[in-house]
Length: 150
Image (cartoon, rainbow, N blue to C red; front, side):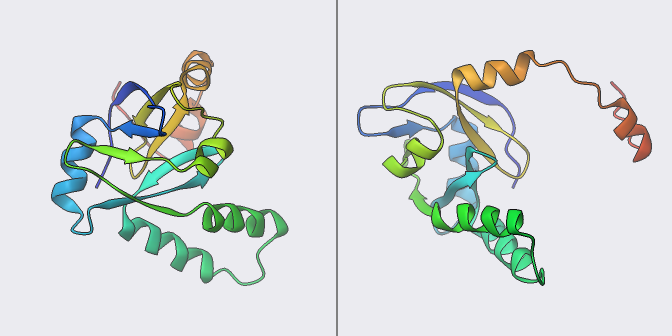
């Protein structure tokens, strides 16, 4: 499952978020469990499928003698793990500890956006900063023989 697109949303007073309809439809049709996994990765709240979570755990578990930085990354992923049921309307509850760790307050405007195999939830300001940042990835694309055709 891939997540594409974005939506601007406001969390309600209980910390609930309405997913974009495309995300909701994909999740409810493709994930029999009816939930997504939420956690923190690179200081952001991410949403992934249960199958993706299992893959991440397997990949991390096979790394022998991880660095302290990787150990900390694992601890953040694992300690912030939440199974978030997706309602028929596409609403998910984001627990207080995830909102705090992702710097998101209740009734705050956020951006929910697809990032391929995951979706991210960021404060609008952080998303806007990322959007306005200039970057040149042409060298990396060339090194990997990737021709996007755009």
